Length: 316
Ligand SMILES: O=C(O)CCC(=O)C(=O)O
Ligand SMILES: [Fe+2]
Image 1 (spheres, helix red, strand yellow):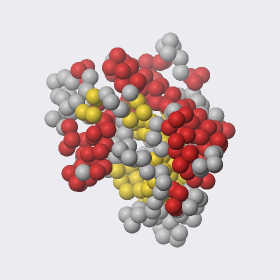
Image 2 (cartoon, protein in one colour):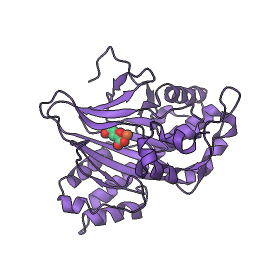
Image 3 (spheres, helix red, strand yellow):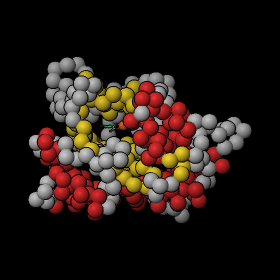
Image 4 (spheres, protein in one colour):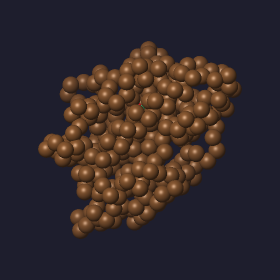
């Protein structure tokens, strides 16, 4: 639980009954989303688009994946897709383990992963991951509609939305085992366009504010998601929304399961909309290809050692 003296992330109600595009309050809500992102680079969305059964089935099916033998888990290697594949415990992050599953809002994408992990089939895994990802991708569309409305750049987004692909990353963290607090995942910004995080039961995610303070994320309910800007989104918004530094700290004797859905932009050059460039906001980023950026930041020595790889890659 986060302590009450700590700053808290904004919580925004995106329940379907309260989202009426024709209501007077719609514009205010869109501004609320934008301001939360401008201040923290993320917020907690309350969203009822993922039925409880789908969420529970997804967590159950993905948790079973971690029990597979290592020689099976490492089969999840997909060439040329940044972040896809299996990552086992490493010296830098001994508690951490994850699968990256590409193209997860399509039946083909999910089934090709399932076939690798469970050659005799696993319908529950395929169905629950597909249903979960499709529902969270709808949340992404809502969030993008709101931000682009608030900035008055709706027309710039539609083409990009058609080029969005989704990577799903179930993650397991081992317990800290008596140690006071242990790093689950090292501080980083996401290289995605946008990320949607949720967790099973155990807390651990922390977000760094602009003042350098770490905020412990306390998910208010199982219908809540952390909506987080990635580096590509930071560049697209001309730096008005910054991708926040975040990490996972493990404490206590419980393991932790979380999942991230990473929206990425494929085969589409990302360009800052001209409405976001003016005297007070000179152009900060050149047009870029998101996949090339991810490969730069993850696989090249220059990208890996840069404090802000998106600026190194395409900053003006
Ligand atoms: O486990 C979490 O809550 C966060 C994971 C994360 O930051 C990532 O996978 O990029
Ligand atoms: Fe992250």
